[in-house]
Length: 331
Length: 301
Image (tube, rainbow over all chains, first blue to last red):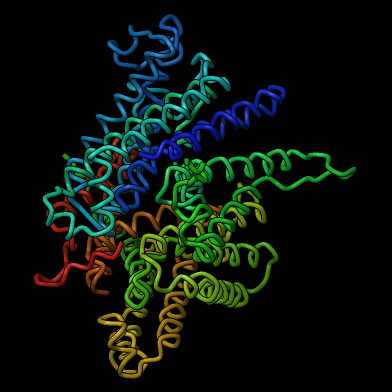
């Protein structure tokens, strides 16, 4: 086990958090946003990177986690006014920040496991389209089913507990889980199936079981990220839909699909770029000139960047490898 | 209960939507056949064509100019997409290609957002096609009939192209086995160019038909439809153009039928029912509903 494979990405997450403290609240929010997106990207990496199967559906687990944490933490005296058609057993309940995040992770894992049970039997294109179906179904149900959430309106009155500290700790937890998984027996077996499914089967690895386990674990991390999101801003179903699916997939692809280092580098690089562009859409002064980009130009830049990276360097900025620190010579 | 709500009206709606979705399935399936690439950005081609129609309508240009502009924009975009994205990615893993077209789709959509704004434009030059004609007490919108006829004409033309011309023969050969086809002298760039061109032409036709049905053109125009058609294409079976087309028609027919027949409090969950059905079918027949038995399983993504 190479500890540098853990230390490098973890250090980068801490560094991003530390740099964030240098700024005032209005800029700090970009760092928090990027760190929460990083948790989604690491969740995505956990499954896609290790299995080699593309999933468009992870944002569904983010959405489910967000709904769980959001509904649990709205103060119960406000629930009858804000969410009048909620199930009674949900309306009575009220829990704290940490409990809601754990519940979000648990619900994300259970949902992913249930969905994965049939889905992981599929492979190839059918699997990709089916994960898309999961996102569509989840979005559709959360949008119209008001017994479990706010439906078409935004979550309000959820305590805003996701500050820079919570986002950084969240990022560290995600990195730690992904590192522990990829060094475990399960992670190694899944990566073997990615390289050569036939050879992996021949040495007795069950492709189905390994994919399912990874899917559920990454569902837990994605649900946890959803919990962080709902504690950050008044969320609607549209924020946890195609745009988030696109931007997180872009982050992972640009960084490099097959390494944790790539996931972290991609999330922070694209998140940083996206933040600068978002600020430029509001107009920033630089070098005595005001740069004012029209709204929507961020996605143009990120989309073009993603296409460019795919064409010129398909294995991503990091080449899909972990970072190797030069070793000190002993003796 | 639900059956009682199914009227001839709803069946006509289903046939109209099914015809359009079948054409989209052909456009996606043709390119998949030769490139093994699922073009996620197909809906954005249609969107670009629809915006061309809307701009022409806004300026008050005659209809034929609008249609010419629509086809020009769509064809130029498809060829550019092939040259700039598909060609450099040839030989990459299908997962990379799928993600790349996903990126192109978002790129085009956000360019449209920059250019035309989120509220969109109205393309109303064929508004009178929305008037109904009455056939034996059933009101059918003219566009439904036009869509079915247009789809039939396009499919027959395509069958003639694939069956009776040299380039059609090459395309069929390439979609069966690209390597072998190249070895016996099929020009790869020509075949792929032809497939992209035909699929672009179809996108132009679909843009015209869809703007009559929904005249408000927004940057996410046809995005929904593309996702549903992709599900339909996989549902039918990607390995053959015919089964992909049938899948596209089936999913269009069912969503048009149920969308018209169900009351609103049920039809808002229509996408969920549709995708649950698709996933269930894929579990039983991963190669597709209409795939021939014994077709080799192609695991490319």
